[in-house]
Amino acid sequence: MVCESLFWYLKEKIAMVIILGSIGLMLLENVIGVDMYLIACIGAVLLVLTGILSEKEALESIHMPTIFLFAGVLALSDAIKVTGAGEVVADLMIKIIGNNTNTYVIMAVFFMIPFILTLVTSACIKIGVDPRAAVVGVLTASCISIMTPMAAPCQIMIIEPGGYKLKDYLKCGTPLAIILAIMTIFLMPLMFPMQ
Image (cartoon, rainbow, N blue to C red; front, side):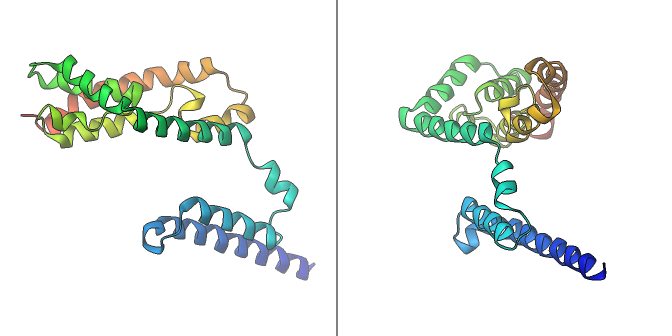
């Protein structure tokens, strides 16, 4: 009984060291020169090699819809860069704002378009506004991925175990997204006055 308890204690500590070590190395990705995905793969292999996870458990824990989602997003991201779609979006924002100097209208544009497309960070420089407010608005909008299960990896990973449907995400996410949009649009110009 004592040996079994000691075995589980050591196993738990080894798992903790591997997981925290992997996270720490991921944070130092640029310093050590090893890609984050490679560090994660090495950590996962170490968990299997040390017997913390069986091969079956490791394979069952892979959520294939998430893998395919990421593969599709990476290809789409490359296509957007190559085709110049990002520049098209930036030019569209400039046309929408025009000569308008109302900071709230400008903030609304910088929030809503990235909220929908999340590809427009370069537009703030082209229209000559304080880039800090625009960048914070873009970052805030791109982080509010709460309205669909495909918006973020954590969203798609809980849809099946939680038994959620798309309408559940829309029902809970839409009011929160509207509140966050209004707060961002009205607070960013106060925090970083646009000129």
